[in-house]
Length: 238
Ligand SMILES: [Zn+2]
Image (tube, rainbow, N blue to C red):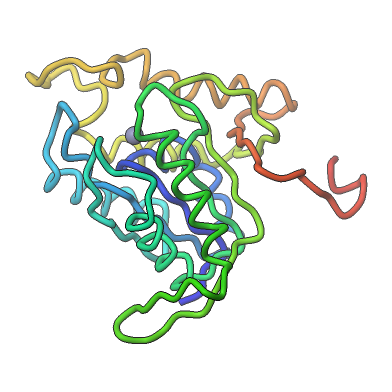
């Protein structure tokens, strides 16, 4: 199945927090979007890998993604090496996305910049003919996505461009809240973490509002781009 956009996240919930509204908007406009999580988030202070599997499935349904896979890499300890790059190359060649979305280039959690660079490197390597991969016994064709964009997570990173996601924030919040073990829950008896505070949950909306304010809309999500952002003509930037 060919996809238009493939979004990678080091942990289930990274994609939702970083770019769920953009994904929901793309899907509403007929694009086919998939999510690949690198780990099951088994080192998360709250919840368990099994619980996060269930939450990720629900979040994916809310967004309407065509596929969601989990590569089962080791949370906290996966590396940007040949073994891990090849597993990501297999996903890129399997779904042949035009655009790849991946983790923030710099962040509080060490897996985020690591996953960001790993996916970015794999996107390049996937276009090389002499890297041979097989899926289900069938040799895959080389494939390089046209663009790799990085969403923004914990740290405030200056975006290279922002997407107007007005009208899609409810879906984003619902998909994030599907991870009920991870975020603000006054009834939870589990330990507090940086992402369980009410302020963090509120920040999902106030960051989007602030980015929206800067471009004159209600809500926006920001991205950084590895390449120059090119447009067909000046009117497309209006
Ligand atoms: Zn994460």
